[in-house]
Picture 1: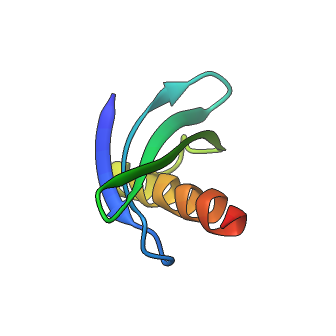
Picture 2: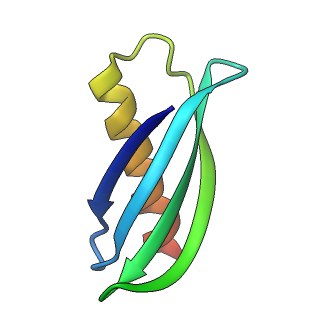
Length: 73
């Protein structure tokens, strides 16, 4: 399992974990905060990662987190 953190384009901080899963994918779960206050949690899956390097997988997960959170808010 891998940990990561970031800030979405709409200003929410997040911490997340991701790990390898079936079907050539990784699954992730992220917790979001704004000004230190809990604002929600989301999870997702990124497919077709077998040909990606570890840094590229991390970027793909971060892009998916951004997409899911920002498109909802």
